[in-house]
Image (cartoon, rainbow, N blue to C red; front, side):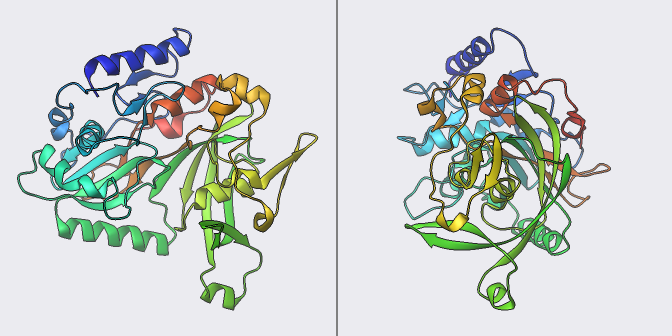
Length: 369
């Protein structure tokens, strides 16, 4: 993305915010404000790679990042490999030793079918673009396609294998290693707690959907039903929405989205599972997953006005789920709680501003790693 386009995006966001400098300053494709700690600057994991991050040359068109009404989103249509590599180079959070950390845009698939443009498909070009001198990047940990946030890569196969085993062992021990930020439509009944549910994948209308299972039997478990667990904490609220910190202790597709639906507070931009939450006379209730068809998320008129969206624009609302923090073994990142952090994306910060989640207790997200 060229410098002129980047400045224009910042100007658009500032205009949409009424010219106010709210919730921190806009920084590139990210929102650097209260709620995000800066990238660690330690001897073991520093900022050595930052001089590689600027895209090469101006874009021939308006650029691969969408501006209004959702600033900073990746536009996947007609995106060339070179443009995607430039976006990913600009998304590098940190680079030191064998480890490279990216802040992945929402909507970018990590894997896909042969010939599809994905994160994995451009790793060879990204390795070259970051000046890794023949060393090839390998994937260690990543957020899903519809989720923005941290992607951890390594040029060392042994390091990648060690860290992957660390994440697997942590899940088996139910020790949280990943912290997500989400904006929810609705406010959880309790400020913090845990969500437990047995989940299974069902193939419906050509799509794999996650369905809760009540009181699973031993046979259900053998056939693929998995008991899942997440911790949540409400960080701040505003305009009927909540900024929620989520820590999955198990790994299952769409686990966090389904868990928040079970709390009757679907994640903003969840166009897959939010229809399972019904409302009658202002009271929310859970609809049967098996008989509820997938549809675009429907927001009430008050929230649409607050978000400055038309109903048609709301159908394109991106998922507000961001992998904000990863905890690593101490010898990879120094500090009392070794972790990597990433900035929220622009559309995420804009939403927080519009629903007036300002000045609340943001300390868990501000506190340096």
